[in-house]
Structures are given as C-alpha cells and as structure tokens.
Image 1 (cartoon, rainbow, N blue to C red):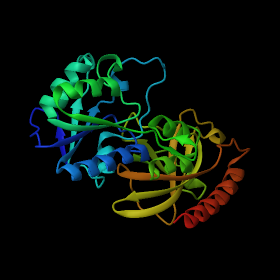
Image 2 (image 1 turned 30 degrees about the horizontal axis):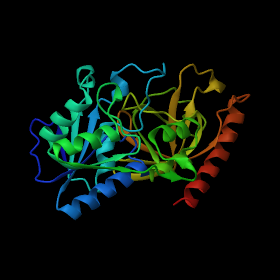
Image 3 (image 1 turned 180 degrees about the vertical axis):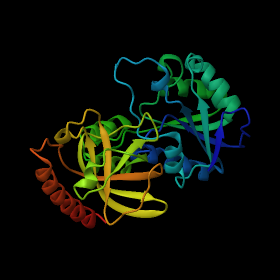
Length: 312
C-alpha cells in the first residue's frame, strides 16, 4: 500500500477503483467496502484507492454537539490497520475550512476525476461529501454519467443486530463494552501511551503501575474502571490489568490511566507502550483504606489472568 499526502504528486493509475471517507476505526463495515473494492479492481484490472482526510472534519468544523470528537485511531494507527486489506493507494487529503467549502460538483471534477482518475467508485450507504455534506449517492450517480465513471453503493451491514459504524463503536467503548466493540472492528481497541512518573502508590501496595499519557491527544478513552489488557513494549507481548479513573481512595483529582503488567519489572519511563483492551471487569471504587484496596487488587489480578488465558 502506497501512502500519498495530497493529490498533487499522485500518479493516476489507468483504472482507479475508488472509495472515500474518514474510515475511523476501520471497522467491519469499512472492511466490507474495501474487500468489494479489491474484488472490483481485480475484475477490471484496476488499482484500489482510498481517499481519506486529515484532520478529521469534526476536528476542523463546528458541530451541533458541544462534546469534542474522540477518535478511535490516529492517522498512524489507521495506516497500520489498513495494511493487508487490499489497498494499492491511500491518498490523505489535508482537510481545512477552505476545503470544506468545495461544492459537491467541484469535488467530483477536481478530486475524483482530475486528481484521482476515478473509473469506478464504491461508497457506503451513508456516504456524504462536499460543502455542508450536500453530496450523496444519488448526486454521485447523476454526475458519474457526465464524467464517464460508474458508482455503486454498499448496503448497511449489521452484526448482532447493531449497525456497524464508527459512532456505534465509540458508544460501546464509552460504556466500557470493549469486548462488544471488538466485534464491530475485528480487533481489540488499542491505545498507545507514553509512560510517565505517577504517585507510585501502586508500588507501595505491591502493584507497581505504569502511568500512561495517550500519545494521540484526540484518542477516545473508554469508561472508567478496571480492565484486563494485553500490551506490547519493545516487541515483547505482555498481559496485565489497567485502571482508568480518579483514584478516589487516595483522593485523586485528575483522571489517570495506569497499567500493572504481570511478571514484568523493567524501567520503562518515557517509553511508549501499546495497550489492547480485552474486557472490563469492574467499576472504579472508593475503598475505605489502602489495605482493602490491596485485597481487591489481588482479586483483580486473578480475574484478569483468568480472562486473558480464556481469550488467548
């Protein structure tokens, strides 16, 4: 997969089979589109192109929701997830307020036709584009005839009676249902964090934790609580338990993300570690004292080890 930043230097293939969108989370619905894209390109001897945007439009434009967008993936994570899914080209367009004002017709003419050389386009059932998201499948189909390319729409996909979407994935994560979110994406939710110095209370309790600061500032953080997790550091695959919360037992005032890695004792301050959320096991609790907290941590470790063994 070749990654292109902008279309100025993009060398148009003879037969481009194109899709476009944010593809945040690269969920199973996205994967279905990409598989169809690959099959179509093979049928016509073409090359596959995914046209995406950075920053995400919601990070640039005002939205009816006052809540800031929390994203499932950084662009680096998205590129990694897209590898091996049949793409020949990933074209990343810089998104700005100026770009957002491009009329749907101009988007088709300047980007899809003149920039990419689109011969066939495959879109999801809810695809929108152009100024105020005025462009849709019907607009594409109408103009495709004029510009000499074909367009088709992929139907909505459902898993366990839930629509497969980035929005649904975010909602599940915010409810702590990381195992259900994994069913929509085909992979455990990941967070890359830099290890920073904390209060070292866990060390005093016999559970030394790594305090994590998310590397990607717009990353969605799942619901507070304790999770069974897997981790990767320096090509080592590790297991552990992770707490997201405010540490009420010790009167914490700021949300922290702390992971206790099983059977691990190396100093990894200022290094990056990748966390995979496997299952949430309980809410955050304000314990009466540190002794009671320590007893709970012993039980948590046992539960997490069991879950991670069962879900190998």
